[in-house]
Image (cartoon, rainbow, N blue to C red):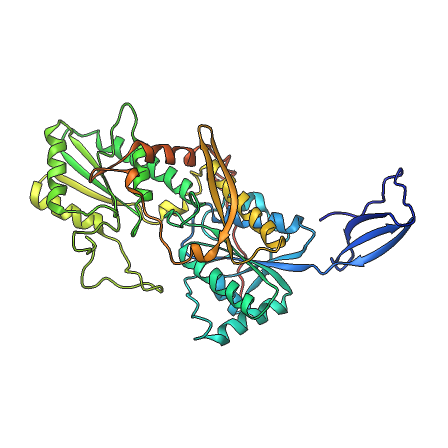
Length: 451
């Protein structure tokens, strides 16, 4: 916050000239001192508080965005206090609110997962659940919230869309801004999403390590690495970054954007064996589907999550059994699972820096009067890599899904050089992680329950 300062000694205040300075009184109300003809007039400004929350699947960068929101909020004269809702919109509904003004934002940036906790709560339409919206905006009024920043992925942007529309319809002065987050990289408009770069770095590193491990044996083998990605194959495509002049692994890459055939899969592996590859490394998206649109991992016991999406896992295991039955060679499947999104020891500096910046930019957008928007990255150059941060109407993003374009796919089991050029800048740089007793230091939220 800006501190009170006397006007410069050489300031000449004529009868009608003004000289203004911003400061805060002991109650943290922002005011301006207007010097009129040498006399100071104190004018109280109508500042409000900022509330932020996190939602959806955690990432290694979502807390960096939170840090950006906190830092920008604390330093902005239009914001009195910064608060956080514990467990996303559920924390708002249950009045689980924490003050965040004094949080260690440096340590927060290297902390994986969601410091404030998350949720998967889909708000009803305002016409179907008006009481829910009344409860939310009553909470906003209780804490004098003028700015609400929601950090999340696709379904979270649906919440931003609904809340901003309700506020606009009922003429409630609360700016609602979405801060993108998802390792899946499937949000429309934005070039990429915070969290994706660090996940891609982890995946490429892990695939490289698994490939090295598999090469120690002369025996023919197949290693199937299952990577997150329900309908979009961005993460699985990132496995191609593991390739170098010494190792072509992964040899085969299967994305959900391409129809998957078990017969073709076996033929692809056999072709690798025939070409002299002893240890075949395969990267598959969890959401690969056959020509009928059925998930390879789907069976009669597949359940649904809170948003009605099928809960997927096990594509690698299904394919492991199939390869063993048909080819009879040594085969194993590796499911990277949640480690893709919580590897705080292997962060992309580009990702963390951008996550912080886009959180801070969201605060400025809200203070500037924008609402019903999501902050987004616009790539303006690849060599050198450059991005700009902008905002875009939330209704262009909510409930949409960005899939891997055809130009980034090569055949039925690979990605193109254009994809690699897109991916490379996003994993660059390392964060100097702070350690204690040999382990990375993370920031833990104090146990909190409503009194």
